[in-house]
Length: 276
Length: 307
Image 1 (cartoon, chains in turn cyan, yellow):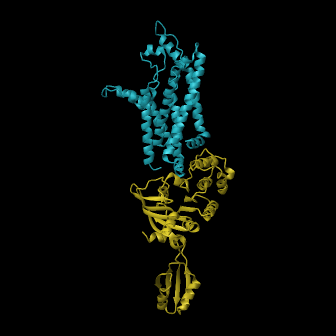
Image 2 (image 1 turned 90 degrees about the horizontal axis):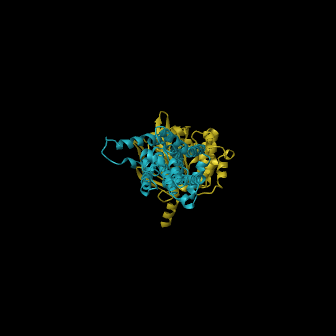
């Protein structure tokens, strides 16, 4: 395992595109998280202009709900696309440069090759979870007045949800990369699926055109996004009439993990069957 | 008897039995069987599209054969056997944004070697000066040489080279051939695919000739590719000459032609030795001239005869 990571590090360490994309990801993620409160209050102001009794401004950076709020804003589609593209590039590069062939010739097994990519995904997810945890603690401590340890740690399980979201979405990206093998095509189809195909499918399944069902929330991407479904903002509840989740649900985590497992299985099977 | 049998098994590096590979309608390899023994420089010779690269891809497990099987070092193929093989297949495949050193470190990691051999192979292939420049800045010749360097890493038991001099300038070709001969002299088994007869003749000890996926011949280069030169002969009594030349141990065929006869031999025959042979038979030649054929002509004939 250490050996596989050593090899992956060499492939990544001086790869400019990887660092540029990672840099952009951090930039957008940090800006997005810091601006989230401001943007929500803009919406509240808009809403308030039509109301006799205005809603109060929200604050999202206080314990314990900051765990849920940051986990939500760090896993919206617009942010998740970055690590997904990084993973797709890292995998399809191996096909473009034919280095997967060379790795096999040199004595790597297909299982090891797949495992090395999964290890990188696992590592990126872990690092991101640690960084977000640190960021949450810093932001939360500076925004919360009566700090107690139990208050800080309450709801911190949302970080597990964030980790699972990161992990499974990158596995989806890996699946696209391995199946399509072409960088441009994989990124295009993944982006289309993320922003267009599944949203359309989501509403199509709810429409009267199909038999009555409740499949929509179980679509692969929705399953991932539903791990942290909404930020914990009271105004949202009042405005949109939604029920806020107050903890990570085990079942909601299992669905994307199940999808990921199936995709890893299919990827391995295809890798074994196909000529390189 | 039994110990002899054991030695035979130990000495076999690669045995291919009856492999076939088909791409749609095209039968790329058809029932190919081969045996490569330790220390041989084994050439796979054939025109473009004769199934050489497909065969090498199969034995490196890049392609799956439709039927048949092969064994490395007497065992079914595995990633462990691949670690003992160094190979250059088609184009050099490396990460363009990494330097030769880092690219070779990746190879060493996969093969469970240390990094101490990297400087040696880079020096051998003349790339040491450029060891820290990115691969994508390399010329084709340098890329090809890096592929050879990667194949040589860790002194593999077997070296597989697919058209190793393809696309190189004359100097590069000479350098690579010299390198191959040097490695062969150290006892490394080498399997080399080429469409250049001249190359196989210069480098290999054994050869298999492929055409359209079928093996035409295999054996020692000196036997398979022996140039059966022909001689034009004449003597006072042509009939006697014709009869006695048939007694020659290397005789293959004779073609009468007016006042001369054209004689083909299986092996190379020295004109002096030939003259002496007839002299002992009591025949004095009035005419003796050697007709040489080019290697390429010979190769084409080999392929032609087996259409």
